[in-house]
Length: 118
Image (cartoon, rainbow, N blue to C red; front, side):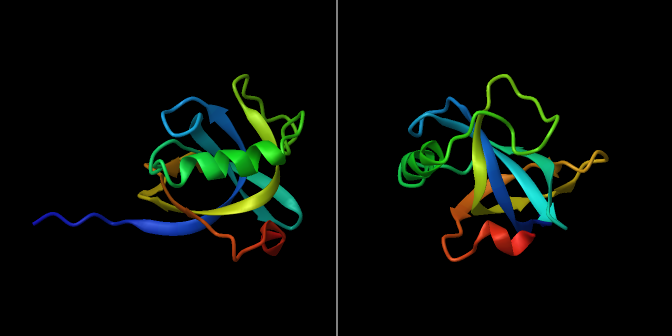
């Protein structure tokens, strides 16, 4: 019998890449926050559905910014947002360069504030 080791945690959305079939949300760009600083941890492009994708994209579009909230972080396809939305992500672990391994979107945490991470 095979058992997967799945971890779950909360991350701050700092932007998204357009695309996908759920309202134009291709993938979320995620970060953690500590000591007033954001650290990029990768993106998640799976787990959305017709109920979660379009409302989340609408929330993100309402808080768009013109540049990355993490200085020096570049992504030519990204739509950057203010770091205000917290999401719950399942993942399998961390890569050697501190990126999420096999992440999957679970839900928006409307009961959590990104400010709690700082």
